[in-house]
Amino acid sequence: LTKDASKEAMWGTGDPGYKIKAEFNNKSHVRGVISMARSQNPDSAGSQFFICHGEPKFLDNQYTAFGKLIKGDDVLEKIATTPTHPQDRPDKRMNVESIKIVPADSVK
Image (cartoon, rainbow, N blue to C red; front, side):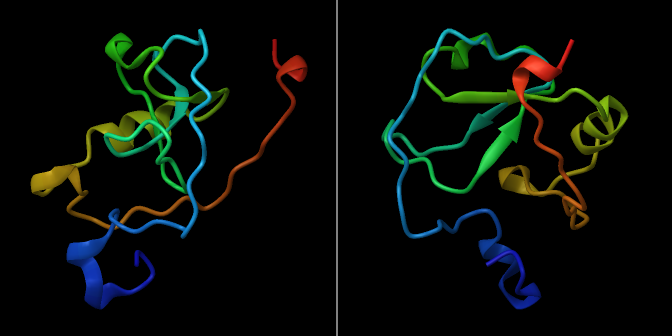
């Protein structure tokens, strides 16, 4: 849906057609943590994720944290301070241009 400009009102509402079972863990939701988005059903995650800007610890043990931002804090800040429509959709389209996944043991 997000690739179709004519369906802007639907952006952020689609799913990939499959669900991922919750994998809650003891990782705390602090700034830079990457976690799976989901509906009220704990086993409803799919292709959407969020990057924590603040420290929403109320999400701990309720959402699957699976990564951490190791570079690009300035980009996170720009994303977080972008004006939004109702439902927290950015006024301006934002795209992930690149991402690099590295093993946890390679990060200091």
